[in-house]
Amino acid sequence: MPEITDVITQSISAILFAGYGFHALLSDSMVAEFKRYGLARFRALTGALQVLGSLGIVVGQFYQPALLLAAAGLTAMMVLGVITRVRIRDPLVAALPAFSLGVLNGYIFVSAL
Image (cartoon, rainbow, N blue to C red; front, side, top):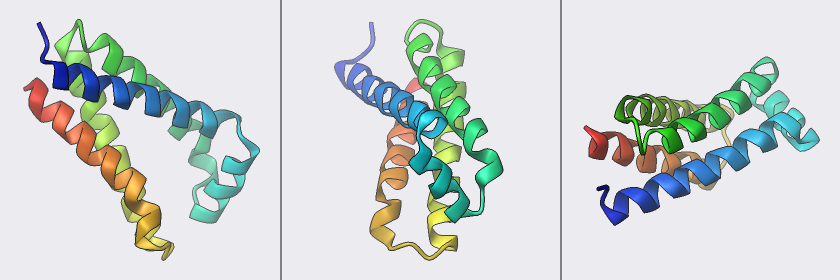
């Protein structure tokens, strides 16, 4: 049976990434943001990977390889998100959500090992 901290962290990750993923896929404001990042052609892929990652976190509660893959992928995506924010010279506070979610998913990955 999973620890309560694992259930909480996995639930937070799954909910937030589902929300961010659908927002990236469906929101006009995200079209503008991805243009600003210089990554307009990756918006739909990013959103789809976030939604798939959130599903992987949920499935991972029953099948550990899915959890490991999803947590690793979402961690890598958030590292790239932080790098993107630094590259476009956004204020460091703008990178805080990506940094926090990267740490959270890094924790999920290590905890699942």
